[in-house]
Length: 227
Image (cartoon, rainbow, N blue to C red; front, side, top):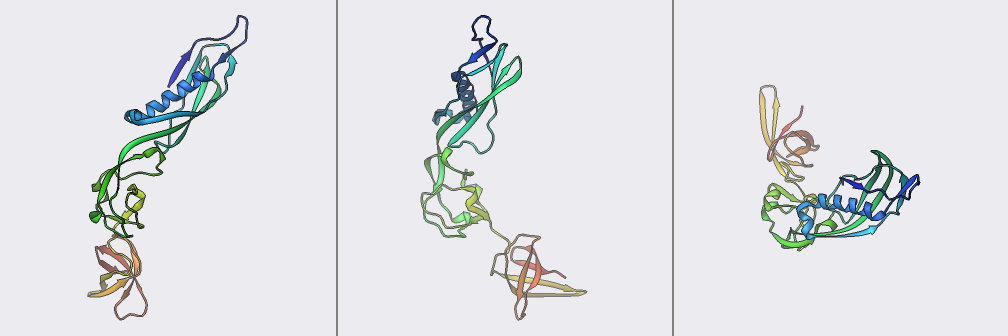
């Protein structure tokens, strides 16, 4: 975003003064652009203002750097380039504190580790999303086929990092074990020692065996011994 400034210099001077308030305005405009529709629910406060700067004479424009990374966030620094005749002569940073309220989904009840997405009830609550680190769950459909990585407390905001895919084979799960030796095909039962998804290789202790074998997951609850 570019802002063109009028010249502020005494006659005969080789330099002109750029007021800090101008840089704040350019930075604030970038914050507003990045907030978009969230702007109406945002509280934006300037917490770090640069000093006025003296630059050479010429046509002055201010350009704010685009904001990148996790957004919105509680603290944001916007770098502003001061250009004279198109050339960057100074770069300053304006710091803001942000509060952005939005309806998010939270857990209705306390939940144990491993709870499946299908069994979890989410409720809406107002939250300052700028203070939240990470991505929130946007709908209950997003957690279908997932399970909790750790226990959760009622009222906690539902985050994508709370979940993992439900594996086709889980640790200590009873599985069907398939094995082929030439024209001979065997089928038996065993217990998986690791978790994984289709194509992964996990150790499986076949019933009656003393040591586990390596087996590739071919379907939910089904593995095939790797030769």
